[in-house]
Length: 267
Image (tube, rainbow, N blue to C red; front, side):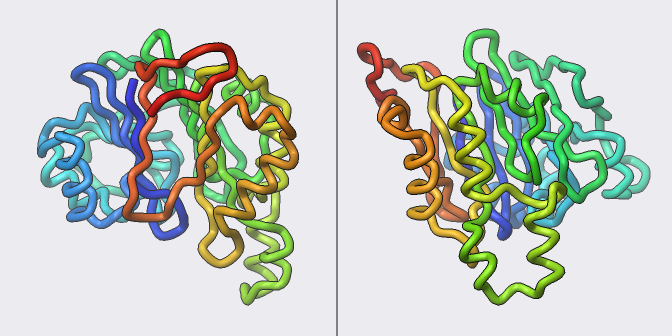
């Protein structure tokens, strides 16, 4: 299974998951031209996606969807709440999914997991090819037991590290927005992300991506430093990356070899 992050952050989110002839686009939060160009670079042409998954209806996750569907005639997979919030009108090809129920999409099995975020029935996703598993949770205000269990066994963990608490506190955002961000229905801080990751086991072959970093209230250095300090020496056992907002795709491939106990995946 191959996972490629095309963009991650408040300016846009899109991630590709591939296995064999199955290609899923998870969120379409980039302009259509940018999505088509990025997909083409991965040798994914028009009308070759298997499906488009949506985590929720916020603009940074769906802004390119409508125009992309002119070139990708595939079903949009989302919860009933997300579909209502999109209000797409008749003739919109879709499949409604229920959190906690697994679905087969080509060669992949997709499990939507309910998350706490200020959207209409938002979800994260666990995707498996039968051997490797990726867990993708990019917008959530708290990590409950269902989310933790989804992360616990994943080979690739994609988890939000949206803001540094000090930067948010001192930053220019208005007070109501700061309150929204750090609420249980907002976003995860570096500290909350780190404390969640610290509860996981760190075994060879696992990789961690820190996602949805704020442009104003975080930096990749701060996010990595907080996570590594919280995890301790165990962080040397697995690669930990911060996902860029735009322009530099990040890739993980479950077929890449792992050499020796505690060695890093070779990418």
